[in-house]
Amino acid sequence: MEVLYGRLTPSEFKASLQKAPIAYLPLGTLEWHGAHLPLGSDFLQSQGFFIKLAQRVGGVVLPPLFLGPDKELEIDEFEYYGMDYFGYAPNPPRQLPGSAYWVPNYLFSAIIEAILKQLGRAGFKIVVAYGHGPSTDYFIKNGEGLGKRFDLAIFTLSRPEAERKDDMEFQGDHAAMIETSIMMALHPKLVHMENLPKDPNEWPLAVEGKDPRKYASAELGDKIINYHLERMERILNDQLAKLT
Ligand SMILES: [Zn+2]
Image 1: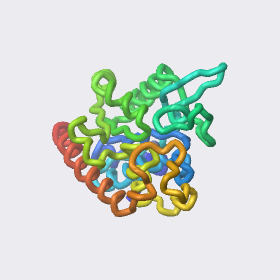
Image 2: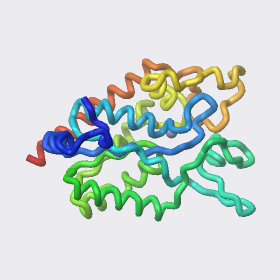
Image 3: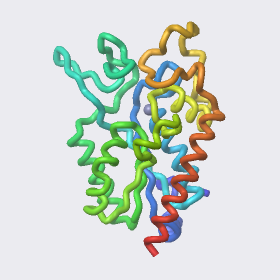
């Protein structure tokens, strides 16, 4: 079943909207995700997941957004973003190859408001947005207010803090066990474990979480994906029932 927004004809779009007025927005980056994962890993995971979710619940998947906010540090008039300097980052800060996504918070917020306005106008009632951590955090923090403003019910895949200790949070690390496992399940040909250091004592550059060389597997990726598919299917079906 076709669920990618850009590939639908107007009549297919109308039929989809009538069945389930849900838009899925993959929040991405073009960002260093270890030497073993592709730069688009953030949206490849959320987009891949949303395609499966849309096929189960209905709704359409928007093109991924590759611009996003992140922590920022300026040294000698040069800007470093997120993994360039934060967490298990290179020390001293260093521009990681391939990262090209950063926008300041005010601009990200303006882009999201424009997207939500257009989605409401097009007839959607529910928006599910997820992916890159700081982009998702924006929705967690502002989702309720934005929902009221644009007459939309807004969701992420994020769970309450207390439930997150189980290593099952979707994209809940950076290029480590969780993200590597999800990529192995969704896009096995894009994962290159052979690019990681052979010496187990050498920590892979700018990878944050449990060691993907030791713990990542396609089986774990499938387990995480299926857990969140079932959880979101329940949540969205409840919300759809409220609409009618
Ligand atoms: Zn990521």
